[in-house]
Length: 305
Image 1: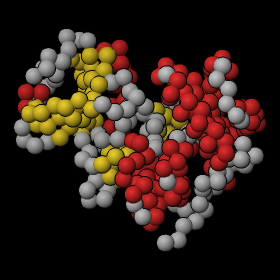
Image 2: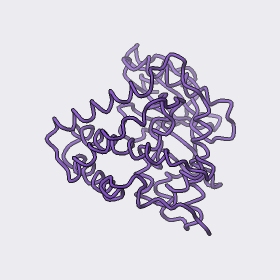
Image 3: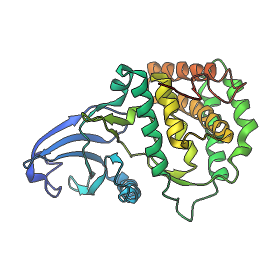
């Protein structure tokens, strides 16, 4: 047994441990099988992440009462590796990556899985934020200021950046008086799996937070790029087929902000990743007609089989 794992309670019952090479997190991830056939997800983080991992576990456990959501649920966390690391154990969802499965499905199933993704997210958002949360407008405007400053200092111009920033500035007022709830933090098709029985599962809660529930649609561009039907279904499932106009305006604001931040975020990963993010930002601008519109071109207002 690897020395890193030896201090983890129950590790002596593990019959197989395989490292998972996927995702952007600095955590090391492992697939674990136990002697009695159970499957687990293990994450190993630096000891400096202990408080963050504690908050993550406590936040996600607030979903325990929602039993009809298939998700990777926290089991345990603690210190290991001579107090140099933090371990986190989760339930394992046995399935295929949704981003590989969805494009191969027929139109009806693409939409159906998107609708289910929206329903699941709506249930997660029933968990209210803590009472001591800062007002959302105050918090998110600070983030916007940082996003714009980081982008301006990055010297990485892209076509439509001026229109993006102008749209953001003109719509900051929409942040006033927004509610705050539990947030998955990185909700898109890349963090979903589909089981052999056809159930949609949600994984990777390592960015869990609290905030405006509609901010969770800031990464729906990943879904739309894969399947407009899935992305549209997600919006309909979330809203129970009754989408308010304000939703689209705020979704556009969060997507615009996310495009700026993602370009600066990509810098440490090299030119290829920066170019990918610039390309995606330009695709988003095209979908929004360079923010002359606030409903994206990929959105399907209704779907009939």
